[in-house]
Image 1 (cartoon, one colour):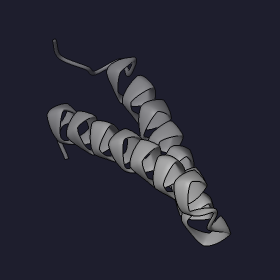
Image 2 (cartoon, helix red, strand yellow; image 1 turned 135 degrees about the vertical axis):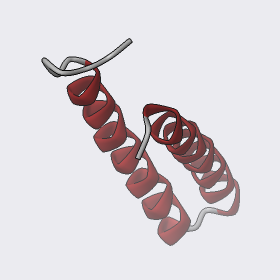
Image 3 (spheres, rainbow, N blue to C red; image 1 turned 180 degrees about the vertical axis):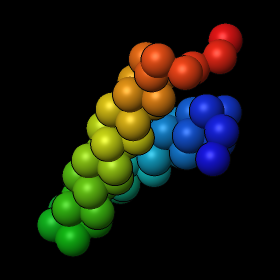
Length: 61
């Protein structure tokens, strides 16, 4: 999986988390807020993976 694909996934998860949190707060629904938090955690994991892949010894620019 290329770095561009991970970057696209990162921004998708960030967008989904923002929408999930806003919609969950608006409707006062705990399940939707929890899903938004899970999207935030997925975005953090993808960001850490991008950091690891870009700092590898065999990384080409």
